[in-house]
Picture 1 (tube, rainbow, N blue to C red):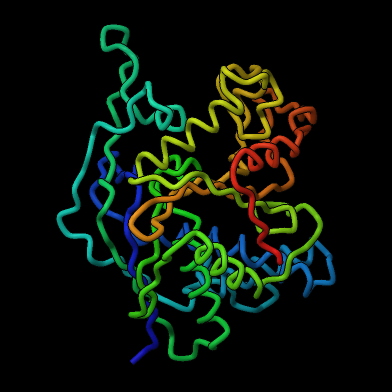
Picture 2: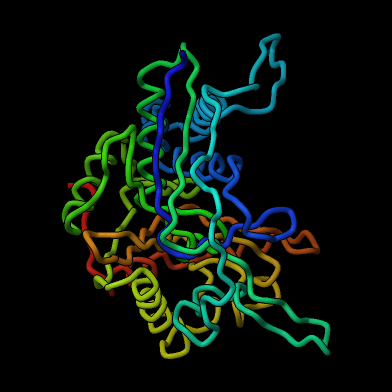
Length: 348
């Protein structure tokens, strides 16, 4: 029988995940695998770069090769050698029968609504621009993930996958606006062992232990990844997950929204496009370096913000003009926001 890794998760905030018809019907294996790829890459950049002697081009090639080995990739022949194909495991999502769906959160006028523009009902039917409220999987529901490993899988690869499952369940989630804390998940069990935190210090300590196994580089990563520039901020503890999420929305709006002095193109560091941006910024695409997450701590909930600065990429304009000014951002605004929360050091 092949080796197996099992992980159980709780949906902490409503998960806006959809099928081909934009219906929140299930959690697909492909979406889970995509999330695991993201967190594996985020964890492993420093380690791979160090192994490549800080040669970024060589590190990216090695990272890609390792990712294909673990997760699979396009089968092709390179220099008479077969690469790609199936990875080291088959993934199955279980325990998601009769998932409950909601249609009424967040409200457009709430702080959570500020973080979730595009999720709530908008427009007008008579004008032809009406958009209904997006469906979401209700919070408080559980699901499990099973990785069935090839019998030849090395223990180091198995540990790397277990670490990735932890990172996803401690920092991430699934679905639309996941970087704004929607669809947050919490790891509850790994290989049958309970994973829970009695206090925020336990969460921080576990995070430090996880990250200690991965090299940290002082240079800015070429993509969203952990580095010496990574920061973690904790917001106030709340009685329920929606209140914790709303608090993050309040803090973020007061820092970069209408009440703040931040105006114009300074905001592009938080991601593009954004409301009030230039026409060039409206065509550009850049995910936010800030990852919001809500996590259960004992019987309450904590809002977390992870700052993962990276080289700032952008999409060229429709005229295919490379506007390098769009790459000019002030990363100090990211750390400035983290300082509005309780900042903790991950590298001690």
